[in-house]
Length: 97
Image (tube, rainbow, N blue to C red; front, side, top):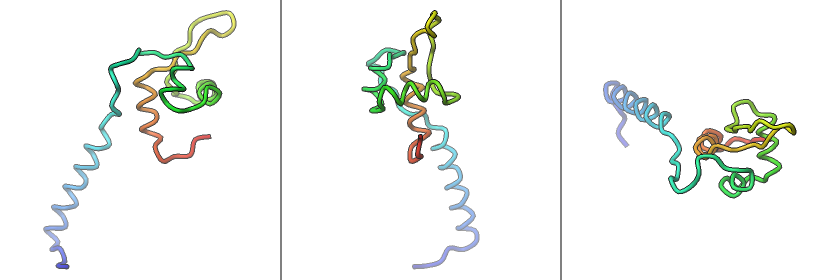
């Protein structure tokens, strides 16, 4: 296999950097066939996470995509469909406790 010249390597490096930049700006695709907000049962079916894990993340994890309803018992928790899709994509390959 032939070695790259310094010029070829510089061009290839610049192209790779541009590809990485483009890929890092991509958002997770979101299906348009569902509600914007989901209850915990729907969010569990959508993500494959247990209801207990979703409640845990909603309570403990800053930035987890939830909307809370005002109520005397703390209110209901709703999960953003798009926010969950983006959160899953951002955490792909990570171990989440």
